[in-house]
Amino acid sequence: MSLPPLPHAPGSPRSGGGPRHTGLPPVADGRTVLLVLGSFPGAASLAAQQYYAHPRNHFWPLLAALWPAHPQPADYAGRLQWLLARGLGLWDVYAACEREGSLDAAIRHAQLNDFARLRQRCPGLRAVAHNGGESFRHARAVQAALGLPAHRLPSTSPANASWSFARKLQGWRDVVQAVGLA
Image (tube, rainbow, N blue to C red; front, side, top):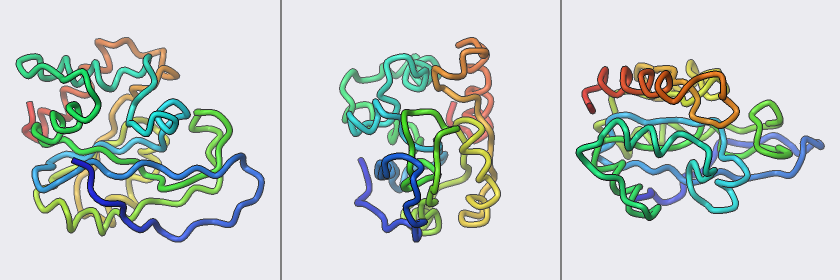
């Protein structure tokens, strides 16, 4: 289940970096052990108001492959419950930003999410995993706010085409096993 919206960190003034977008609320609860942080939702995810909504993003197929004994629901609400039941939470490093399109390289004037406040709501949280390089760029700030180990995951984005599905899966499996969720 999604938590109620958290207040975001103070933002930067708008200065021509594209339309200003607000991210999605965290998906986390008291069962969350590992928080997966993306950078910021792409255009398809913002339009659908769903994490990893782009049909070519490997996020949902990778998780289905990690837990084959637990079939992944087809509907989004069911998928979120499925994630939470496995101890996995979702959010992004950025609360809001200016951006044209979906590429991380186009993000401008971003503001970070309030991670310290999220920590209070997730007492069982043991680690953070950054889905891709842009998210991992903020690993130190997130680690300072949460006091937890950080892992870098291979990006599930279709823009990360140089990594095969099998190679991404192994990277994700290693992190999920390291925190005891596999």
